[in-house]
Length: 178
Image (cartoon, rainbow, N blue to C red; front, side, top):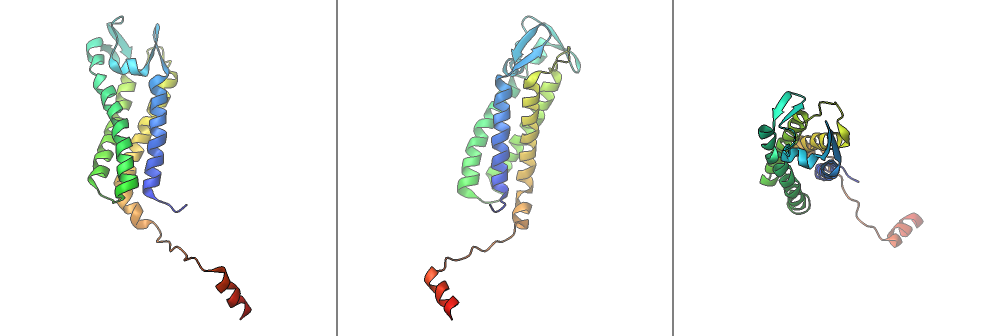
């Protein structure tokens, strides 16, 4: 298959979304609790008023503000589905507004997710599978954003392959007989 930056971007998006959804549903280890990444981002810390994370004690009120991260990341999945359909399959034009918006959304969501998951890292250092799923998907979202930035250059570097025209078999046989 001929190299195409859009095909690569769509593949990265697909893997990132799959990993993110796996992390969304995977239990996440916390001191005394096992809650999902989804609940962690929602800031459901009614029992633990203060959560001891990677960056020290985080009040429940501050943790609750990370509900926005969950909302943004959920929107990312929807926007990426629409963007992939429109950009990859319909427009196929580098530098389009969809490419720019998708790039900003991807990189922003990846950074927010990594920061959020770092804050909520368990004091027991038991990260859980959800941590790795979400962190991996965040890195892929950032990679996809960088791919979108470099896409015009990648398209320029792509070899201009010429497709061979179909030649009737009878003509080939005639040329062999000459």
